[in-house]
Image: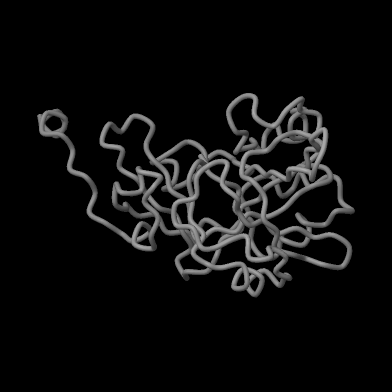
Length: 236
């Protein structure tokens, strides 16, 4: 986690939810099956303005020799984000929020590949803590990229996967986004009350195909039945 999520709101709606200005210039649309390396919306604060910006999901450190070597760095562990070279500078100076309608998750050893969806119970967007970076090529414009901050899963979520995105309550947004603050250790663990707002349910295996992209992917669905031989093991 986090390797797949959904954003049903367009940038204008996100700007309204996050008290921000839309600076995407039409570069983004709702996406119900967001995969790594896609262009995604982030919320940043610079100067007196909070804005919605389009960036690529999969962080490229400022010091990287190129932007394509190795797998996409889509997640940053909260436990090591301030010390790991790839993320430390961003954790101190370039924090952001990644808005989401919810995220998809799979049990690591589930051969059925049964997906689950975690969202807010009230239907509002949740704010995943994230960091971003700007990588400059030899010529041309910088490539701005981001990574989700993850932490140990707790409660019902731990029954699906051992990691989860760090979801921040509205009361913590300003502190996390403040570019003048270089340390936010008190925000690098799940905040009280946030988990009470989350709902987890199974969804269609259509999510497993990244080409599928429609609102119905987020809806509750009957889980895939266990194979007969596996079910028999639990009945004996």
